[in-house]
Length: 189
Ligand code: GLN
Figure 1 (tube, protein in one colour):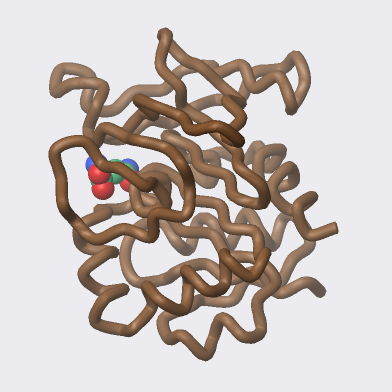
Figure 2 (cartoon, rainbow, N blue to C red):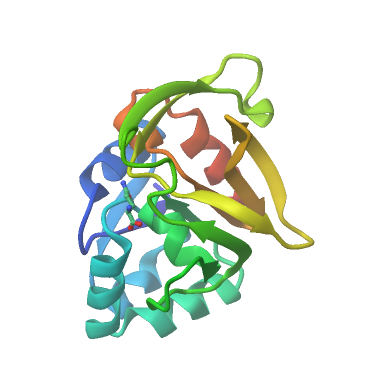
């Protein structure tokens, strides 16, 4: 079974592990750099990007995850994971991986609509929309050359791909629809 890492420092890592199992993979909880050695891809879950970043720093994971990605291994970031993958975070100097040429805005949908669910059309997954669970979600405010916009919701870019990196503003792991995980796992081929 293909081993796929889930960064397990904080946030919704168990739900991603469950989704990976449903896709026929073996999830590996990653808390130390050497645990990446077994993994053919990595998911960075939602949670709190500042907290995850602080723990990544403490556990020496920034450099190792950067190397993992730069070496051509696929990485999927959801919500806080998207923030951590971004090159630029509006109004914030917080630590990040900077592997994707995107700018993001945190907690970007506003306080009144802190958390919500909505159908999001993701053309690469077909005509049936995914149920997007947005929890204090970021969105993408700028994309560089080489970044593909994969979904737009309410005029905001909420899913992007670049090489073997994928970043989404919402939480596919909180639904039973595994199409987005499966789409990501195709990067392994
Ligand atoms: N607002 C969080 C952050 O910026 C992300 C929220 C989430 O992952 N659900 O880190």
